[in-house]
Length: 488
Ligand code: LLP
Image (cartoon, rainbow, N blue to C red; front, side, top):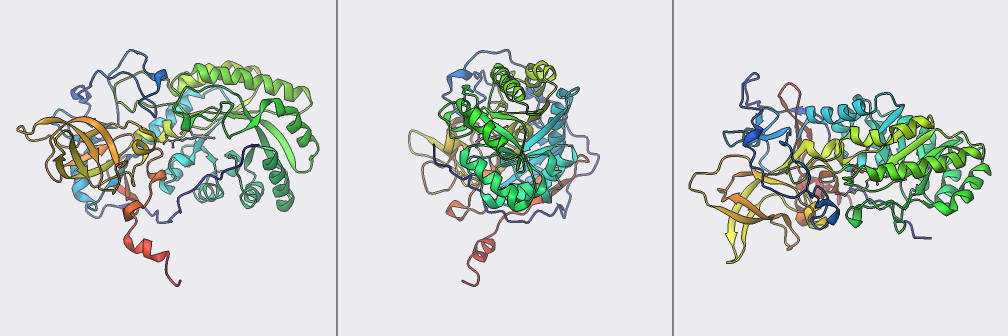
């Protein structure tokens, strides 16, 4: 059996009070040129809306459509978030890299899932690992989401955000006993990942004095056709139980009637999936397992299918599967077995709601390559360095007419060559201090940020429905770092 590895978590610094900006620089009802997305300069990029630029599954040609986004470049050459100029927001907040979200876009993304799920009994289990900002979690909870958790701290945070624990699912291949005890006490669904995990869940149930509702996480052995780092449902993955061991797990559940109640089956395929057929294939397998489990007298009525939809990281206007496409491929199967459906989206709910906003420190060349050096870096946003992931980059204000358009690597100040946010990007040569955004930074960016090179984690803001801007997380400071050494 593969050794279990615990999900590593960033230390949580609980500084998540909402602050309206002290000085709100925009008249409330300013009419700004909006809806001008036609001016978007779309390059004829092939569809590669996945984590890696090397994934062959994504190079299909697909019809393109005008890209619509909460961040739009208007005809005046300025980037807007909803109807606010990003440049003006930059000037009104702390002078350091920051994450900027659109709260209405978060709502719109959840509504798309809710509309798609109409007519089904379901839980939208938001995957907290994608973004664990407390204010965002409270908003998602208010919109009716449940939560998918992969650590005890994510469970504690979900409880703090007010999530109903009976709409939460605890996942993971290395869940710790203490965390399982908390899950048992709170009545959270727990997905069984292995033999030792089952033993720990039984032990947790005894300690908590509560029966745990469990689902079996079955490895469906389906290739999600994504970057290997985010594939979870193929045979070689460290996650889930081998399907040929299913009977062993059913017998083990039967042997613990006071500790375990089997309520369903779970599978997770991977992240950045761009073909819904993959979900359909997995759902067919899963309902067959559910039929088999039911035939042994278990009353299971939850199907938990994880696997996250990809998004248009390239801003190429590619048509990617929508939540409706996803749900419609499994709807009949779910209804045919009278199941409750649990889905676990992270990225597709939150990624496109946010940009990392940076300032240009300077421009340089090594003779063959040009570099735009910004204040943000791999510490704030590691996906390009870690996965060679593409995230779209643009300047927030029009460049001067005399600025030459060139190809640049966009890099940070961190002292290693892995520190890049984008390679070979065509940009107008920016002036010192110009604003530059990395798009689609809502998922797995802040939650994976570090303090490498003592670049402290950035503050976060969102644009509210009424057009005001609020701080939704304080930036970390040097003093926060020193606090870890106090009294030692
Ligand atoms: N549920 C489980 C059990 C998962 O393992 C994941 C993601 C999700 C839900 C959410 O999937 P999503 O809808 O976000 O695709 N750090 C990588 C992503 C790793 C995701 C792994 N599991 C990245 O930056 O792209």
